[in-house]
Length: 146
Image (cartoon, rainbow, N blue to C red; front, side, top):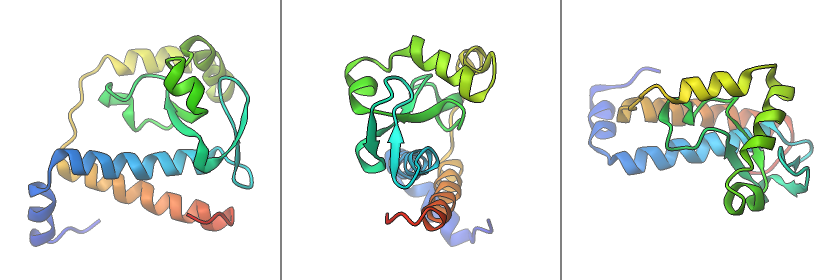
Protein backbone atom coordinates (compact mmCIF):
# COMPACT_ATOMS: atom_id res chain seq x y z
CA UNK A 1 0.00 0.00 0.00
CA UNK A 2 1.37 3.39 -0.97
CA UNK A 3 1.05 5.93 1.82
CA UNK A 4 1.44 9.62 1.09
CA UNK A 5 3.44 11.75 3.53
CA UNK A 6 0.23 13.50 4.60
CA UNK A 7 -1.62 10.20 5.19
CA UNK A 8 1.42 8.74 7.01
CA UNK A 9 1.55 11.77 9.30
CA UNK A 10 -2.19 11.58 10.04
CA UNK A 11 -2.00 7.86 10.86
CA UNK A 12 1.03 8.36 13.08
CA UNK A 13 -0.74 11.14 15.01
CA UNK A 14 -3.89 9.10 15.64
CA UNK A 15 -4.12 7.45 19.02
CA UNK A 16 -2.88 3.90 19.49
CA UNK A 17 -6.27 3.05 20.99
CA UNK A 18 -8.03 4.18 17.80
CA UNK A 19 -5.67 2.22 15.55
CA UNK A 20 -5.94 -0.92 17.71
CA UNK A 21 -9.75 -0.76 17.76
CA UNK A 22 -9.95 -0.41 13.98
CA UNK A 23 -7.53 -3.30 13.35
CA UNK A 24 -9.39 -5.48 15.89
CA UNK A 25 -12.77 -4.68 14.34
CA UNK A 26 -11.84 -5.76 10.81
CA UNK A 27 -9.78 -8.75 11.96
CA UNK A 28 -12.73 -9.96 14.05
CA UNK A 29 -15.18 -9.54 11.17
CA UNK A 30 -12.84 -11.45 8.87
CA UNK A 31 -12.35 -14.37 11.30
CA UNK A 32 -16.09 -14.70 11.93
CA UNK A 33 -16.89 -14.57 8.21
CA UNK A 34 -14.07 -17.03 7.45
CA UNK A 35 -15.56 -19.54 9.89
CA UNK A 36 -19.16 -19.05 8.76
CA UNK A 37 -21.24 -21.05 6.36
CA UNK A 38 -24.12 -19.00 4.98
CA UNK A 39 -23.73 -16.58 7.88
CA UNK A 40 -23.96 -19.29 10.55
CA UNK A 41 -21.07 -20.44 12.76
CA UNK A 42 -20.38 -23.33 15.10
CA UNK A 43 -18.44 -22.36 18.25
CA UNK A 44 -14.98 -23.93 18.25
CA UNK A 45 -15.30 -24.98 21.89
CA UNK A 46 -18.93 -25.95 22.59
CA UNK A 47 -20.33 -26.45 19.07
CA UNK A 48 -23.30 -24.14 19.66
CA UNK A 49 -24.59 -22.57 16.47
CA UNK A 50 -24.97 -18.79 16.14
CA UNK A 51 -25.22 -16.07 13.53
CA UNK A 52 -21.83 -14.60 12.60
CA UNK A 53 -22.97 -11.31 14.17
CA UNK A 54 -23.72 -12.96 17.54
CA UNK A 55 -20.42 -14.72 18.07
CA UNK A 56 -16.95 -13.54 19.10
CA UNK A 57 -13.56 -13.80 17.51
CA UNK A 58 -12.04 -16.01 20.21
CA UNK A 59 -8.29 -15.88 20.80
CA UNK A 60 -6.64 -19.06 22.08
CA UNK A 61 -3.65 -17.01 23.24
CA UNK A 62 -5.32 -13.94 24.68
CA UNK A 63 -5.42 -10.59 22.87
CA UNK A 64 -2.93 -9.14 25.34
CA UNK A 65 -0.29 -11.33 23.67
CA UNK A 66 0.44 -9.03 20.76
CA UNK A 67 2.58 -11.52 18.84
CA UNK A 68 -0.48 -13.76 18.33
CA UNK A 69 -3.24 -11.13 18.42
CA UNK A 70 -3.63 -11.12 14.62
CA UNK A 71 -2.57 -14.73 14.00
CA UNK A 72 -5.31 -16.47 12.01
CA UNK A 73 -4.50 -19.88 13.51
CA UNK A 74 -4.87 -18.41 17.01
CA UNK A 75 -8.32 -16.97 16.32
CA UNK A 76 -11.57 -18.80 15.69
CA UNK A 77 -15.28 -18.15 16.04
CA UNK A 78 -16.32 -18.73 19.63
CA UNK A 79 -19.66 -18.15 21.31
CA UNK A 80 -19.78 -15.35 23.86
CA UNK A 81 -20.50 -17.75 26.72
CA UNK A 82 -17.31 -19.74 26.10
CA UNK A 83 -15.18 -16.71 25.24
CA UNK A 84 -16.31 -14.24 27.89
CA UNK A 85 -17.79 -16.25 30.74
CA UNK A 86 -15.74 -19.44 30.65
CA UNK A 87 -12.33 -17.79 30.00
CA UNK A 88 -12.09 -19.25 26.51
CA UNK A 89 -12.13 -22.92 27.60
CA UNK A 90 -8.46 -23.13 26.66
CA UNK A 91 -8.11 -26.91 26.97
CA UNK A 92 -10.93 -27.58 24.49
CA UNK A 93 -9.81 -24.66 22.31
CA UNK A 94 -6.26 -26.11 22.10
CA UNK A 95 -7.50 -29.57 21.16
CA UNK A 96 -9.79 -28.19 18.46
CA UNK A 97 -7.09 -25.89 17.04
CA UNK A 98 -4.83 -28.93 16.67
CA UNK A 99 -7.64 -30.81 14.89
CA UNK A 100 -8.43 -27.86 12.63
CA UNK A 101 -4.94 -26.50 11.91
CA UNK A 102 -2.65 -29.48 12.48
CA UNK A 103 -0.97 -31.28 15.34
CA UNK A 104 1.07 -29.09 17.73
CA UNK A 105 -0.46 -25.83 16.45
CA UNK A 106 -1.61 -24.91 19.97
CA UNK A 107 1.88 -25.52 21.35
CA UNK A 108 3.44 -23.41 18.57
CA UNK A 109 1.01 -20.61 19.43
CA UNK A 110 1.94 -20.86 23.14
CA UNK A 111 5.60 -20.43 22.21
CA UNK A 112 4.91 -17.60 19.76
CA UNK A 113 2.79 -15.77 22.38
CA UNK A 114 5.82 -15.47 24.66
CA UNK A 115 7.62 -13.26 22.14
CA UNK A 116 7.23 -9.54 22.71
CA UNK A 117 5.65 -7.51 19.93
CA UNK A 118 4.59 -3.89 19.80
CA UNK A 119 2.81 -2.67 16.71
CA UNK A 120 3.33 0.85 15.39
CA UNK A 121 0.34 2.92 14.32
CA UNK A 122 1.35 2.35 10.70
CA UNK A 123 1.47 -1.44 11.18
CA UNK A 124 -1.96 -1.36 12.84
CA UNK A 125 -3.32 0.74 9.98
CA UNK A 126 -1.96 -1.80 7.46
CA UNK A 127 -3.51 -4.69 9.42
CA UNK A 128 -6.83 -2.84 9.45
CA UNK A 129 -6.68 -2.28 5.68
CA UNK A 130 -5.64 -5.88 4.94
CA UNK A 131 -8.46 -7.42 6.97
CA UNK A 132 -11.01 -4.86 5.80
CA UNK A 133 -10.27 -5.89 2.21
CA UNK A 134 -10.31 -9.61 3.07
CA UNK A 135 -13.58 -9.27 5.01
CA UNK A 136 -15.33 -7.33 2.25
CA UNK A 137 -14.19 -9.86 -0.36
CA UNK A 138 -15.32 -12.78 1.81
CA UNK A 139 -18.68 -11.16 2.59
CA UNK A 140 -19.26 -10.64 -1.13
CA UNK A 141 -18.32 -14.23 -2.01
CA UNK A 142 -20.54 -15.65 0.76
CA UNK A 143 -23.34 -13.16 0.01
CA UNK A 144 -23.37 -11.81 3.56
CA UNK A 145 -24.37 -8.24 4.38
CA UNK A 146 -21.94 -6.36 6.63
